[in-house]
Length: 420
Image (tube, rainbow, N blue to C red; front, side, top):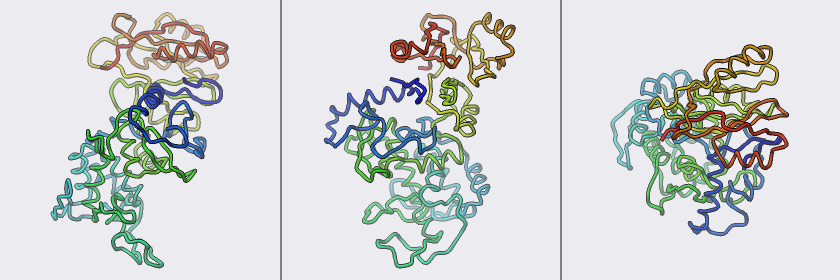
């Protein structure tokens, strides 16, 4: 259950579900026995040697990117990709080569790098931002300056004595596909690297024998950087599984770091009506927003204070089911936020507590109709003078049972019509 103590954050529902599925499905999938349980799980949330405190607060090694951002193949046009490369003074800005092609079908047509990236993204239904982040992760092709090296040929092992890789080598191995010693799955050349690498990142096979096959709760064996040991983990979605199949090392911080540096937290997407939840580690409160722009700003600029916990829920935005504004206040004294659907409570707060609260207007639209709606439960944190909201009955019951000394249950605050 979520940890709402002073020590840490509450796990979002997606993590709780994944952990439960891990326990239920590990036996069903007949995973091989190991020295310790798969992670995340009730036996331990992180493998031995991994200290989450040494990584960014908003990083989750089991959920690297949201499904929406993974599949957002129209997030950048070819012209926008070209402009991005130019803005970074990338060696790819004016680079053209043979385009490569899908499924190993090599095409010798010469095209600019931005065109190759855009076409591969569209063909495999993968976000071009993820391709750009991978190009940087694997060969630093976004930020490196063109340089010569003593060795620019194909990958060989051991490397020639005194070898220094030049940009030519980095282009040949752009996405890192088949670059490890002894690999038979080699695709030398920028075009083929982009096409094959994007295919692997976008893979979602239905064949259980595939290395890229994923179902919720499936266990994957990888290697842990901190402990230099084989560990078993439970990636929470298909793209995260793909990252570990692509590069079988825990954690997958490199691709997250590059994506976050260029485009913002890859787990925060722009799905209409999605309510993102953050935990304020300073005052122990929670912050909720429907704005992807605001969520990215908090994740990027306020990560020293806020931990991103993922989506709280997704609202139905296709009908008028959510027709009542949810009003938001900012507590100037402790930095927390207060939400209410009650116009009377809004007016009383504005009238009587203006020295404490700043009225910030409507946060998003909810409902006051309980029919065919999901209740949102509200708690008052007596120690922090803040409120906590959840739609999860299990989380509600756990807080009442375990944290009643700290939280006062105030019942249903409002209702929401959820996206289907």
